Each structure stands twice: as C-alpha cells, then as structure tokens.
Amino acid sequence: MSDRLPMISVEEALQIIKDNIPAPTARDCSLEDAIGRYLAEDVLAPEPSPRYTNSAMDGYGVRWEDVCDAAPNSPAVLTIVGESQAGVPFTGSVRQGVAIRISTGAMLATGCDTVVRVEDTEERSDIVSILAVKKKGQDVRFLGEEFQKGDLLLHKRTKISAPQAALLTSVGITRMRVYTPCRVAVLVTGSELVTAGESIAAHQIRDSNMIMLQTAIQETGGALADCLRISDDEQATQEAIGGTEADIILCTGGVSVGKHDHVKDAAEANGFCPLFWRIRQKPGKPLYFARKGATLLFGLPGNPVSAFMCFAHYVRPVITALNGLPFGWPTVSGEVAADITNQEKRTNMIRVQLTWRPHGGYCITHAEKQGSHMLTSLSEADGYIILGPGQALKTGERSDVYRYDFRREPV
Image (cartoon, rainbow, N blue to C red; front, side, top):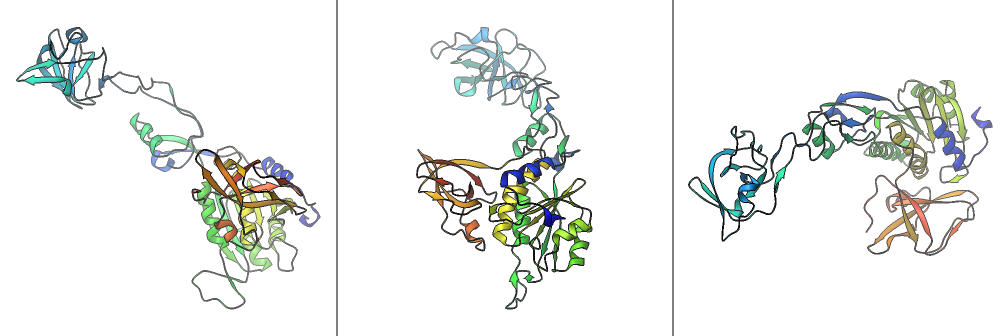
C-alpha cells in the first residue's frame, strides 16, 4: 500500500505529521519525579511570600519615629530589650525608645517598622546608638511582597528545573501535574551492523545510528522505551515492531525498495496505516510515516546523516509536542557570510556553521562537508538551513538556522 503513495513536499509531510499527533497525556507525580518535565497546568501560590515580615539584614529592629532624625553627630539612643533570631522570634513588642537585635530572615517584632544595619550603629552594653537611617521600612521584607496567596506562581508548560523546584518547595508544594514524557523505541535494522567494540569483518560496519538516536531522543526530552538491533529479515522485523510498546517507534534502514527492505511491509502487517513515504528533499528522501491508534512509526533512512536529519526536522518536534510543548524547532537568525545555492532538484537541508559576532549577531557559513555518508557533516556543523530547488541566499541576506540539540556553543 505504501508503494502507491506519491512523493510529497517537506511542507506536506509536516502537515500530515501535525494532523496525526495524539494529544499529550499528563499525570500527577512528586516533585522529585517532575524534575525535567513540563507542567500540565498553572500553579497558584498556596501562601504568600514572604510568609511573614522579616529582616533583610543583621541589625536592629526599631520604630521609624525614634530614629528618623538620627545622624552621626546626633545619634538616636535606644535601649535594647531583646532579640529576634531566624526561627526564634521576639515575642514582645517594641515601644517608644527601645530596639531589638535582629538577624537576617528573623521575624520583625510588633511595633517595628524599620531595620538599621549593624554598620550604621554603635552598641555598648544594652544601649545602641543609631548613626544613620535612610527611610522608613528600610531592609524590611514585607509579608507577601513577592507574591500573595492565589497569585500565578508558574505557567503551564514551564519546565521544572532547579529554580522552579526550589520555588515550589518554598511554598510547600510537593506534588503537581506534569506532561508524561514521550516514550520512544529505536529499532535499528541491518545485517551488516555490529556494535562498536565487537570484532568486525571486512563486509561489516559499526552501528552509529543506535547511540545517535538514543542521545537525540534524550536531548529532546523523550524517554527511551526500547532499543533493538534487527537483521534484514522480514519475520524478525515484523515481530520487533509488533512487540514494541511506545508512543513513537523509530526504525532505521529497510525503508527503500530493495529486496531486503522490510520495515514498511512489517509495519503494515502489524496494523499501521501508512501516511506518507518519500519526501522531495535531500538528505532523507525515503522517510516513511505511519500510525496505529496513538502510536506513530517513523521509518528513517539507514544512512546515519539522513537518519539524523529526518529525526531533527520531523521527529524532534513530535517528541516536543507529546511532551506538552508547541510543535517546533530551536532556531536562530543570522547573516550569510557567502552565497549559498541549492543546485539540487529537491529541497536541500544544508548543514551550516554559526559564528557569533559581538556587534553583528550570528554569521552563517556553508559547512564544507555535505556528503550524506559523512558524519562529520553533522559533528562539524551547528545546524542547517532549508533551501528549495534552485533557491539561493546572497551574501549578507538573513536566514533562519535550525539548531542541533547536541550543539556546541559557536565561537
């Protein structure tokens, strides 16, 4: 059935993929399990911050009326009647003519409205001289000044990283609803493949697709569901696809028209409905896409460069969407350093390098190596641009660059 599907454009392929992405799922979990995931709902503050009015500095809690005229040559002299420590508040009240010692983070006592820093005072026995004070309320953190109970704390789709985890913990939130990580299985086909480190015969090659795709999935925020290497055998391919449970199944190799290419037939034998096969692009023309219920299957080319480019442009945004974020890519804009022309009859995903100019933004350079069999065309590039057949970019023109997830920072 897939052999009768027409070759389509990049835009048509993307639209078909978007139309077939299932809705993301969500679950309640502990904060520890939510690290690295995205919120599936807004989080409101269950309490104010600060929870109580406290001191921002070590010093003395005073009444503004008692110290407002203090100066080095005419200090305000107050009697010290106690101390407020962090975790051990002063239980009395501050009346006219008195002060309390106070620590950073300690609760402000009743009657206090201002904190005077230690360095602006002189203390002898239980008497403190206030030498300077700028304004009423100085160095006081007021209850709720950061946010009030019920305020929006974190937006839906916020990633839970270290700062967010700290914020949630600070207000006592230990459970939340997050999007379930997209589960991705990798099935690498090819009788000629061996694992790196194994002995290798003259007719064999080392499998780089497995580690490449595993890494790309994890960098994109997906969860690895299964990883298998399969020989070019129809029954083995069919059994591997049928025995895999995941949101996305990635197969590499076996999607062309050769006698030993079994992925398409094996997918359809397992009930997958083919949605497209072959895109007018380079590299990655024989990309295959099918769906069965809520499971998506991508048949990537076996060539590592083609496989990765198809992953970057078609699979990565699907993982992103299933993780609860908008369908899309990490991109930057830059100026072309020299003319770049697509002389192919197909849309070309051209690997490029980026150079940051402090006062000119990114500069885009055509990567020297473009061969679809050359992994250095990926490792020595920062991303890719997309040009249609015959399209050209002139020196100084701007273009969007689709950046790789594994990218190094350009220099």
